[in-house]
Amino acid sequence: MIRVLVWNEFKHELTSETVKAVYPDGIHEAIAEFLGKEDDIEVKTAYLDQENCGITKEILDETDVLIWWGHMAHHLVPDAVATLVRDAVHEGMGAIFLHSAHHSKPFKALMGTSCNLTWRETGDSEIVWVIDPAHPITRGIDRCFKLEHEETYGEPFTIPNPDKVLLIGNYSGGEVFRSGVLYERVNGKIFYFQPGHETFPTFKVPEVQTIIKNAVRFVAPTYRTKIDCPHVRNIDDSEGYVIVKK
Ligand code: ZN
Image 1 (cartoon, rainbow, N blue to C red):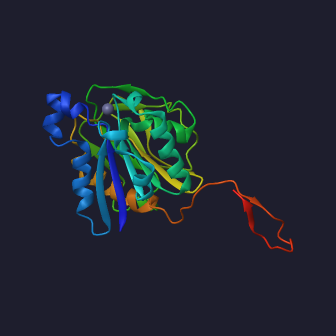
Image 2 (image 1 turned 135 degrees about the horizontal axis):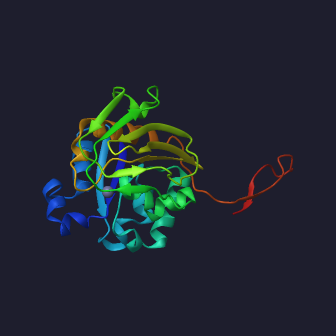
Image 3 (image 1 turned 30 degrees about the horizontal axis):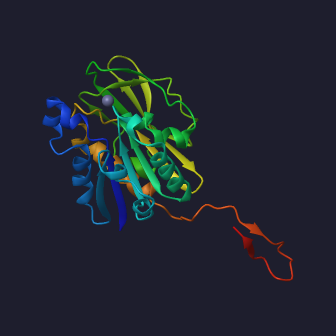
């Protein structure tokens, strides 16, 4: 089983009637609902207002894939929590950052850049184009799919050059945006996926759900280990190639 933790800021759903109407139980529960129907996926959720944001080292140790949605309260996530997430990814945990999580502390810690973009909330439609149809994350998606409304995100997106660009969004207002990008950081795989503005039912769109399910399976760890800095003997040492101390 792939153990998934869906983390949501869970603020808009409590303060905006528009968002509450779309996601009455929160974006995290909407994502957990469709992932939970998969035989090979086990889902838990966490959100900002829980103790320590619902994130501890122990919880991350038992998480194969962390999914993160945040927007208005990135600053309320303690730096220590972002560091825990970054370190868990370096050890091998998979991570999926959705929509406005491009500005979340854990994503920026993993990218090392501002992760800025251009944006507009005018209800543009978006065509999400598959750039890499051979990739496991785009399996089951046609050449493209259309979202009736999304927040417009445009280039330049100040991320490091991705290992792979899988999807590009094209908005009715004209912009294009790298909507699905992949990274590896030490042992961990990271997928950033742009759709998912809180006022639109994007997470109920079948293609969006397919991509998130595929991504969970793709970024799930194949190797995970504690990252340390051991002091070791020479391989020809009479006492053998052993760790002297950590
Ligand atoms: Zn948004």
